[in-house]
Length: 358
Image 1 (cartoon, rainbow, N blue to C red):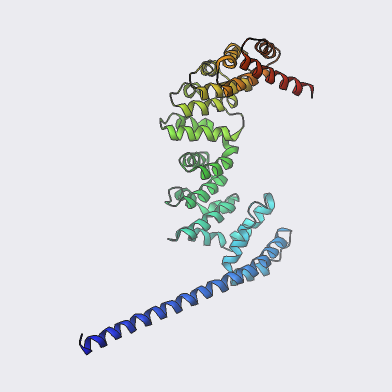
Image 2 (tube, rainbow, N blue to C red):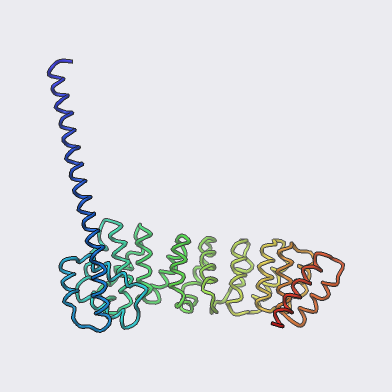
């Protein structure tokens, strides 16, 4: 290698070294600035919260809050969001009105257009909080509706929750459809938010989803309805009780006590008591007990005599919930020649009598 080549190589290495030194210095300075901002925010947020608490308590002096907005606008937004879950009613409206007056809601609307997922997530989380206040809804407009199609699930969730706060029946139906296609965590969160719209959804959205022919979506919808744990005005459940899909039949049986007991539903439940799939017949036994289906007594007795241990116990519990006929049947089984059935029937009967005497 010639002297010229060595000199060029040395210059290149020196240039690379200088470049990386400058890059490290820039990164270190940026990290230092971020740490300083975080430390400042940590110190300021409690002060901002105190000012907001005074305002929510009835004070009309918002000078301190406006000063914070001028110097630490982002931290004021964080402080406002920290009240989520702790204020409601007129206090929440007062806080939302303040956020609107200080143009914070407009800022968050602009942040929804950011290319940074983290910024969009925070923006929609804040909009979800203020969307319960009607004047904020007018400012938000259709931003949250469009966000239901966002590629980031952590954007779709707060957007969906915001829409539940302020949307029409059709838009809330969109949220329900979205929930049925999401992962379990998002579905659980949205299911709870949607509970108060159960009647409207069962009238307009749920029937179409249950007839979609998509087993995964149908199962998700059934599980959401069961999770509401309330009476539902839903017709046509017998079609799912007769479904060939194992998981769908079990979910439909769990839902049956929450919907009107039609003759078609009752006949389907009684058929499931004799199903060859022990999981299905066990779920049917639980449902028969909850609905006090006296017509299922012969099938329940057969389950105690010939079913698996779990099915026998569930059938015995169902009969124990239907005195006096159920107790009489359990007494007969307890005195019968089948020792396993006799033991399970006797245990269920004793438990029922102790509960009745308590």
